[in-house]
Structure formats: structure tokens, C-alpha cells
Length: 396
Image (cartoon, rainbow, N blue to C red; front, side, top):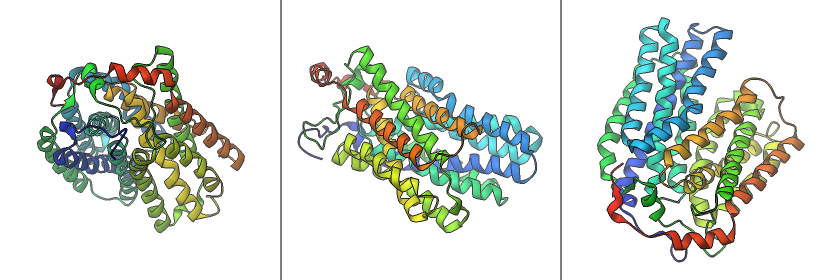
């Protein structure tokens, strides 16, 4: 995009950066698939009973999602996103290998896979947020393949697939990412350097309007809280949906593809046409489609696609509010995902009716609009606070 709101080129936006991002996205799918094979393979082989399976899945999700903010703080402080991503992927592969070789040591293997998944997500998330700072395209492209990985892992685990192809895929992609990442260059290490990156703000409707880093503390806290609320609501609604036609493998594949495409296309569309109209509009459009999704597979598939278009916007907006703390910002959104999913996973809530679903989507759209709108006075102050300090840039 050119004109007002188009970002100046930075060292991290070249072909090598996008190649590294593509590797990270592929590795994201492989890591999530490996975790699915571990968990569902253990259920299939009888290593997890009905009662212990619930505890195992809770342990995994706690480690894979809830601890991410703490890991993000550590990654941001040490500026070791590259090492964190590679170490996390390796730890996940080690967990799957251990589970396949020593089923009696299943709990440590699940813990290793969960922590490895969390660490990889933080490192890869930092990479995606630094390819084009302040944009939603790259985060969407990084996160999107994870849904395909989860689906493949579940199906493969239930079918009794061997572990070694998934371990091999993770190992090969991890090695490739390790060598591709240094080509990035220009990843901001300090908060001051990150603030120097111009935000993609536009004076037109097409440009995303964000609460800037220079906003007052109260505005900052409210914006972050609203964004995390949107993430939690999206997680809750997405898991609470009942779509009985998912037992059809073809429709399930189409539904998974819709999740992937929605997350990938959402960031691209939001950067092109504006964050608020795309993300908030997607939530409102998806509500009636999801409300009839149980009876109509096509409405449900389209509704899921549109519903997931908000993901890269909430992620990029949260990171924009925390310059130099991309890992922590990414971790907070994953913690919000876990919090939104917990009531459904624990069986505390019944499936939403059409009216409740529409209300939840409407509340999420309103909260997202308020978070992205910010205060015009604070936005004006942010322009004066930005200056470029290229000497403070170094490799991640």
C-alpha cells in the first residue's frame, strides 16, 4: 500500500525475512501436528484412560498456552527469539519421541511437548511481528497453518500413525529455520528502537487506527484489556459451536481450510482496507452464519472463515501497544485464548443458542472497535514521539 499510512521499508521486510516466516509457518503446522499425534495417539493406544485423558489435555494446554506470557517476558528480556523458537520445536520433538519410546513416561513427555509448543510459539510469534512491525499480514500468515497442523495431528493420532515422520518434519524445518533466521536483520531489540518503527496509520478510512504506544496508562490498560477480551470471546465462541456435520471428513477438511484461510486472509485484508472495518465487520457478518451453522455446513464454513479474520488484527494491535515486548504481547493473547476455552473444555457452559451467539459476536465487535479506535488526541501525540534510531537494531 502506498500513500498515507504506508510503512517505510526496513531491513526486516526483504525476501529473506518472508522466507524465514514461511519456514516458521510450516514449522508451526509441524509442531502442532506432533503434539496432536502425541496426545491422541496416547488415547488411542490406551495409555490414557477417560479420567486421565482430561487431566493430560488440561496439563498440555496449561503449559502450551497459559505460561506463554512468562516465556514471552524472558524472550523479550534476553532477545533470544530465534533460540527460543528452535529450542521449543526441538523440545516438542523430544516429547513426541519420548512418548513413543517410553509410554510409561507419558506425563513428562506431555509436559515437554506443551512447554516446547509454548516456547516455539513465542519465538515464531516474535519473528512474525518483526517482519513488518505494526502490520497484521505476517502474524496471520504465521498463525494460520497451526489449525491445519492440529487437524492433521488429531486424525493421525487417532489412526495410530507412527511418530517418526512428524519428528523428522519438525527436525528438518527447525534446522532450516535456524539457518534462515540470521538473514532477517533489523529486528528491534529495545523498546526505544521498536517505538522508532513507524506504525501503519492512515488518515483515510483504509488505514488502521491504533492506540499508540504514547497513550496514557489508563488508555493503554483499557485497550489491552478490550483486545484480550475479544480474543477470549472468540476462543469461547469458536469452541462452543456445535456442528454435527464435522464427522464428514470432506466437510471437516473444508472447515479446517476455512480456519487457515480466514486467519491468513484477515491480516492481508485488514492491512489493505483498514483494521476496524475488516475485523469488526467480520465479527458481525459471521454471527448469523454461525447461528445456522449447525444445520447448514456451507453457512458454518463461511462463517468460520470470516470469524477467524479477526485473529491477526487482535494480535498485531496488542503487540503495537507493547513496543519491544512482542513476546509478552503474543503470550498474553495465547493466555486469553486459554481463558476463553477453559469454560468449554471443563464443561461449565452449555452450547450457545442463536441469540447468545449473536450477542457474543456483537460484544466482541464493539470491544474491538473501541480498542482499535483509541483517542484522537493520543494518536496525535504519538507522531511527535517517533524517531528512527538505526544504530539500535540488531539480529533477533
